[in-house]
Image (cartoon, rainbow, N blue to C red; front, side):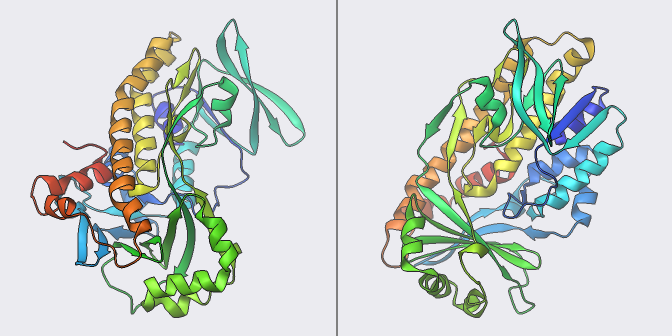
Length: 381
């Protein structure tokens, strides 16, 4: 949506195909980082985003046996927006859609399901898609797959993902937020019962991720939903009464976690961006930021050759070259968090003790800025 808007504003004719009937889906990524807010500010949209129902998160805290440790403090970032914003993705997408509708050279088609790539002489020339019972064809200079971790476009293009180890799954659910809860919205991570619980302020509700070892969901189901409620209530005693209001597994959504990236993000006439090109772990909530940065770079590098009708695969290669290294850095940081913090916490029987070298690093002025910069800005420097 953002890439379509950026290209359309520069005069490129764009058609955006959306497979679903609406933008209303639960438990999607809802975090906008300082880097994302600054990018939107360049488009004059940040004030409109902040006018939506949202919550500001100034820091990520981890509850350990030694007390609460601030893992990432966004208030110290060199940004006009030194905080994470939690905003329903459906509302954010609708805002972008309203902006896109103002562009005369942009067109959005809902419920359009891509079935086939049009390939002529080795070059992708567009797609064939289904609109209800009707079959349609859409030709284009460039086809962009921005269709997420299960990308249909990527599969049709025969582009493989290089997987890496992401040894966790996440069970998401929401609990009501009350006036008696803490005034300052933050993200808090707690450990217990072989699980990591991420508690994030989402305005009227707490969005909660119950993180277990890969494949652990089946064991949760076997123990039964009341046992799951007991485990959550013990980790979050202040919310125990609200946990009891959950009706069953239908109130939760399982996210099997994956972390991978395509070795090659393009082929002649086709480009992948966002999770279609690199599936991010939910650690740090950086997926949306990386995708928006992909869109910004792609629009900057591709608008001129598209307008001139002179697009070459070298232009697409340049997009990957600009974005692949930052993506690798962020994924490496996520893998470090998996190995050094999450794995140990999930294996711990008693209270979680953060490794001594991490506690030391988080007290060193230069080192303690690294997590906030990676999560908030998508870079270290």
